[in-house]
Image (cartoon, rainbow over all chains, first blue to last red):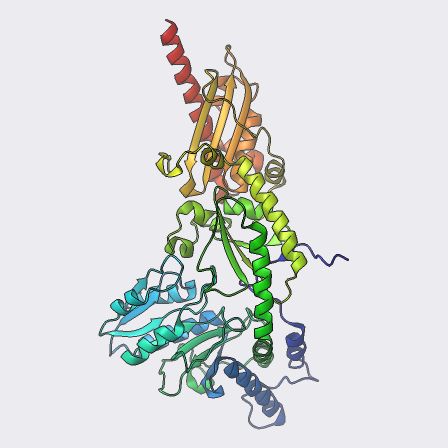
Length: 407
Length: 133
C-alpha cells in the first residue's frame, strides 16, 4: 500500500516538523488548566511549577551536549545565540584585542554579526575552507594573532553537511586562551557533542532543526574556565543577566523534550539516515557529470548535496515540484548569486548554480527516496535535452574555452 | 516564487526544442548568456530565400523563466520576416509571460538571442552575396 504523501519533504536542514511527543508536552504549558505560569514568579505555585518545567528542559539540553544546566542560557534561536556569543565575547574582551577568526562557509547569522563588528572597529579574518569543506588547520593556526580574542567555527555546515574538527580547534584555542564559539544549529541529534572534550566556550543551539518548535534556542556559556560575555538584550536580568525576557515555558519545554528524544534516539536514527542517504546516492550516482559537494564521509548522514552539471538549479527545482528540496542557486530569491558556500569550496559558478541539497530526517522513508530517485533522473535527463551546454559537452567542446558574453 | 500559468505551460511543454544545422547557409544561430550567470540561450532560425523565418529551434540552460522566454520566442518568430522579428522587444515577452521584475533579465536575454541569430544570418548572406558577385 502506498503511503506516499506528495509533496515529499527532503529539506530537513531548513527546518523539521515538531515531533508529536514534543507538541504534546508543549500543549500542556499554555492554557488555564495547564502549566501557564511565569517561571520568574516566586510568590505562588503557578510560577514554581513553570520554573520546574523550564529547569527540567534546561537539564535535557545540557545533557545532550555534556554541559551542566547552569551553563545553558535560553534565547529565541540560533541567530540570537550567534549574536549574543560573538558580539558578547568580542565586546567583553575588546581591551584585550579586537581580532576575530571565522570561516567563509559560516551561516549568515555568524557572517553578518562579524560584518557588524567590523563596522564597530573589530578586525575579522574569514578563512577559506578546503575543497572538501573542512577547515585547514595549518591555515587556522597561521591566522591566530596576539590580539585574537574570539574564534567562531560552525560544527555542521547547513548546506553541505560537513562536520568540522571542533575538538581539534578547541585544543588550540584553549591553549592560546582564545574564546571559542561554535554554531551548532545543525548538529544536535546528528553528531555527538561533548563541550568539555571539545574545549568549546560558547555554543549556539536551536530547537527547530531537532523536531522542536521554531523561535527557541540556547547558548551554552562555559563556567570553568568561565566564558564572559556582555549581554545584548537588557531587561529583568533573566538568565543570570545574560539574556533578559520572560521565559516562554511552552517553547523551552518543547526544546527540552526534542533534545531528550534526540539523545535517546540519535544512534539508531543516524544508522537509518545513513542507509537512506546511501540509497539515494546509489540511485543516481551512475549519472554522468554529477558531483557531491563536501567531504563524503566527514558529513552528517542525512545530507546529500549534489551538483548536476549543465542543468540550472532553479529549473531543476521547478521540475522536482513534487519534492521539497533546496538549491545552492539563489535565483528564487531576489539575488541571482550562486551559493557562497559552494563558491568558497571552489566550485565554479556552473556547478554552484546546478546544485541541489537533499536532507533526510526522522520521517523520511525508503519509498520517498525511491520516488525521488526516479523524479531526479527524469528531470535531469529532460533538462539536459534542453541544455545547449549539454550539447556542447557531448560534442567535446571545452566550456572553459568558450568566450561567453557576460551580462 | 509563483510562476505564471504561461511560464509553467512553456516550461512543461517547451515548443520547438532542438537543433538546426548551424552550417546551413539559411540558418542563423544566436547563442547568448554565460554559464556563470546561470543562463545560456541558443536560438536558431531557418530563413527562406525571400526572407521569411520558416523554422525556429532553441535550447536553453537556465531558470524556468529563461526556458519559457526562449520557447515563446521560437513561436513569435516563425512565419515572420526578418524586419518584423527585429522589432520584437523584451517587454513583449515580459507582458506575454507576466514575468516578475527579478526575471526581466530572461526576456532581455531572449531579445539578445534574436539579435544574435539575425546578425548571424545577415553575415552569412552578405558573405554568399560577395562570393557569388
